[in-house]
Every structure is written in structure tokens, then in C-alpha cells.
Amino acid sequence: MEMPIAESQINKRRLSLSLYMNYLIHGFGIIILAQNMVALGGTWQVPIKTVSFVISGIGIGRLVAYLITGTLADMLSRKLFVFIGMACYLIFALGMVITHSIPVAYGLAILAGIANSALDAGTYTTLVEMNNGKGYDTILIKGFVSIGEFILPLIVAALSANNLWFGWSFIVMAVLTIANMINMSTVKFPKIQRVTLRHHQQTVNQSKKSLRKIFATILLLGYGYTSMAVMIWFTQWITLFAQKSLGYGNLTAHTLLSLYSVGSIIGVITLFILLKRNINEMTLLISLNLVAVIALLIILIEGNNINLVSIASLVFGFSAAGGIMQTGLTVFMNLYPHHRGMVTGAFYFFGSIASFTVPLITGVLSTHSIQLAFAGDLAVALSGTVLMVVLALLNVKEKINNGTN
Image (cartoon, rainbow, N blue to C red; front, side, top):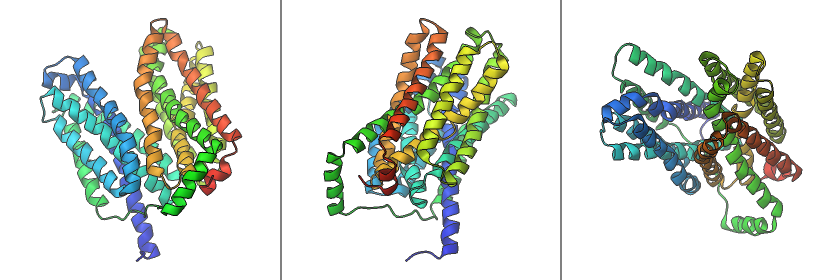
């Protein structure tokens, strides 16, 4: 029995709010260990490099879980995997302030990575299915992550300034998670779009014959890598590049990263509005990736002009980190409308590979020069743009919109 229209709209708003709140909490989870490295090192009586090793467990958890959670979310329940993600983050937050064991802490970090993958598998698919295949609501996920990343450092700084226990930042994360779990337990999720065995077999048989669809899949998986890599690359190296290669002062160099974050939030709002007005997704994917390339070129070529570099950093955040990765995922999900969970897992699996390989690649490049290490981001941005241009040339728009071959 379907809910009345008014009740359905209220349920949709509550569900959307809860899903977004999970990503504000996720914004905490991404940086909470790094923000408390010194305090954790003191509590565990280990050096900072050991705490850094524990943080790497988050990436391991993502890699291990993405393909599994995505596939199971299609077979079982979106709501189940959202709750699994929330439960994992709750255990992570409480466990980190209780344990004094490095192996246990590493296991908890892995659990945080699993939380991330479970939330993605249940959330992106739900938001797309609530809007009949349209992905504009998924763009706001990035905005709530940015809000979480903005709030947490303020909490950590306030605790430190008042000589309060660092663990309160983890407790705040846990309390938010519990409150959201209570709200989430009373809302209904949309039904998973299922497919009959006969139709599924037809789809499989047709897919085998569709070289275009296979090629489009490869391109979108590649974009899952490049769209994540281009952001990680920039955030890890822009400050050092500005200091060592451009000769900027410490404050100015760090301001560039702040401008990137501001640009990201502006990009989320802009992209949400554009997609809600049915602006073509492929047009946005190509144009914004091209803008990101131009912004990086300006930073590399016009390094002596601080004002121009500052504007370019903001524009890069707007174009590369304003939700364009989520837009690519929406295109991918609509190419396989009956396997959205699996597609989400595969897409972010390649993004997780980027989180591992970028530090390795840039580490090698940095042995030659910091400028070369940063300039490598331009090659990645160009690659992402080329992937989207080729995807557009495949003329898959009609198949993506219709969910057919």
C-alpha cells in the first residue's frame, strides 16, 4: 500500500536529510584521525608515523568493501547497507577513544573504510531511485562532506584551546550518528528497481554484443580513477608547490587550499541547480573537466601572479571538486539501471585505487622536483577530459537515459 502524497513527501525529505547527515558525519570520519594525530600518538605512546599507518587502514577498508557492498546492496536492501555504514562509523568513533592497541585501532580504521563503502552503496542508489534516475540530489553529498570537514577542525581547535580531552570530537561524531540512526529507523526507502530473469538474460545477451556499452563502461571506470585522483593530487601538493616552487609564504600557500574548498562548495550548489534544470550531464562533464585543466595551466604558467593563481585555485575547486565525480557516477548508474549498487561499488573502487596510487606516483615525481610532482595533476585532468569527450562521441546519451543497449 502506497503512502498518501503529503506523507510521501515528508518521508522523502526526512530520508534525504538523514542520508545527507550521514555524509556530514563522514566528513568528520575522513579527517578525524589526521586532526588528532598528536593526541592519539600520545595516548597510544607511539610516534606520528605509526598513527599515519593506522590512517591508511581506511583506504584498505574501502578497497576491500566497495565491490562487495555495491553488489549486495542490489540484491538485499539499500536501508540495510546505510545502517551498516552508520553502525561501522559508530563503532569506529567510540572504539578509537577506548582502545590503546595499535592492531585494534588499525582494524577500526578499516571499519571506517567499510562504513564509507556501505554508505555509498546504499545512499547514491537511493537518491537516484527517489528521483527516477536523475542524479542532482547526489551532488549535495559532496557539500555535506565539505561541511563536516569544515566543522571538525573547529571542534578540535576549540578542545585544544580549552585544554579539553581530544576524545570529545569522537564523542560528538558518535552522538550525531546515534541521533541520525533514530531518525533513519522510522523512514521508508524507495523500492529497488528489480528486473525479471527473462529481461535480465536479454540484457546480458545484448550487452555481450554491445561493444559501445562495454567501451563506455571502461571509460567510466577510468573516470572513477581520474576524477578522484585529480582532487587528491591537488590537495596533497598545492601548498608545498606554492611554497617551494612559487615562493609563496606559509599563509598564502595554505589559503590556496582554502580557496579550493570554497570553490568546491560553490560548485556543489551550482551543479545541483544546473542538473535540476535538466542541463545535459555529458555537457557538464566535458565543460567542467576542461575548466579544471585550464585552471591548472594558469597555476603552473602564471605562478608569479598571486591573484590569478588564487582565482584559479577557487575555479579548480569549483570545477573538479564541486560534484562532477558524482555526476559521472549518475551517468554510469543510468547505463546499468538495474545494477546501480554494483556500479557504485565499481566506480568508487577505482577511486580508492587512486587514493593509494597518487601518493606513490607523486612521491616518485617529487624526487625530481616539487613542480613536476604538482604538474602531474595536469596530465590526470587532461586524461579525465579525454575520457569524457570519447564517451560523448560514443553517442551513449540515448542508451543512458533509457537504460537500454
